[in-house]
Length: 341
Image (cartoon, rainbow, N blue to C red; front, side, top):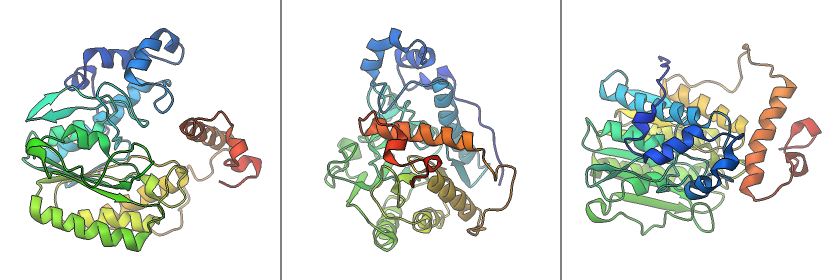
């Protein structure tokens, strides 16, 4: 395994896919001056689910740059598998942020056009892959539908999107079985709506046959797998019942096809579960599965104050998502108050 420090995506690289106005807004807005940009916030749907925070633009650059660099290294045969756990933000909308995401791009009839803003590092990465490859398969195992990526490639046959997600009165409300693409992209979008509580056995019985058939029929030259951790059991916003190993089985199965593959992160709102699962999946990709015991390291003992800060930040987003103003302590999600998560 080689750890590569990717160069953050530049303003110029982002404006190849987004409007100059949108990227300019992202680069200027901060928590201190956001009141001056109230009109732009409304226009671009920034706020609530997509809040303004210190370092927002830098975050967009790092996430997008990681996926673009990973794709470029796959194109140059510098690696067989590229991993960017900071990427995988899949809710892109035309000229607006959505679902905790901020930047994106779109391919329409072979041409790149401006699209909804989300840090759709995924689309930027896929577009990089398409410079050298004719067909790219995108697979999404986040609990939410991968609406942004699907929309970006809905009219082309050069990218096939496959999403396994909760459907029915659930964000973002898209991903119906009959949504299959249009024009040249017809039948190149696959949606598998799922119900609450699906477990490892049921998920495997769906995922493996579908992906096997897609691989045989589409014959992609590269694969992008979004591994959203909110499909894990116990996630604060999720509703599935996948274990760490059940989730990782998807990664292992995609890896078994021995295609150039980019692995991305995504959603996940119970931090310890997400960290545990992505660490395990990294070991699966390396062919050396790790055990359940955490070895002692420099970060083994995290200070209470730091842990409390992380708990507050995560739960603040959770509370915002539910449109409430209650504190995390009222929800009983902070161990520092002696309450369970």
